[in-house]
Image (cartoon, rainbow, N blue to C red; front, side):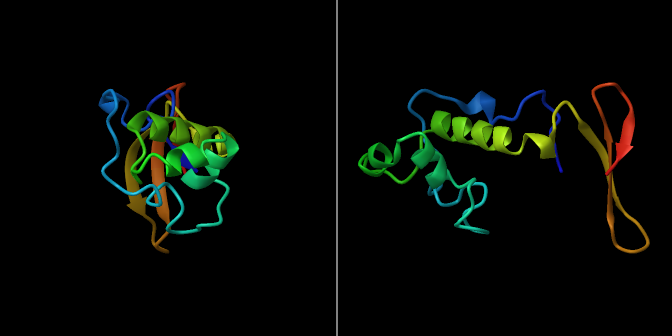
Length: 114
């Protein structure tokens, strides 16, 4: 489960400066270092949107921030059933067995423990 305080999933929306790029290599996306075969890799995002050749021919391995933001939103759509937006985490604790208990407030103001 992914809990997001905002009402939408975005990548640093205040940092979308024109023509600005990420400081990191595109393989350091949301998943590739854990599972390079994942359907949620940045490279797969480029494939799905027919942008691989353009990206690889641009001479830079750091994507534009706006492209990475669109990638993050694309992943969020793919994980829609596992994401709770407008949900604020208010505490994270361990129970006696070492299980994490995450208390959050949902959009209705109700507290839920995950």
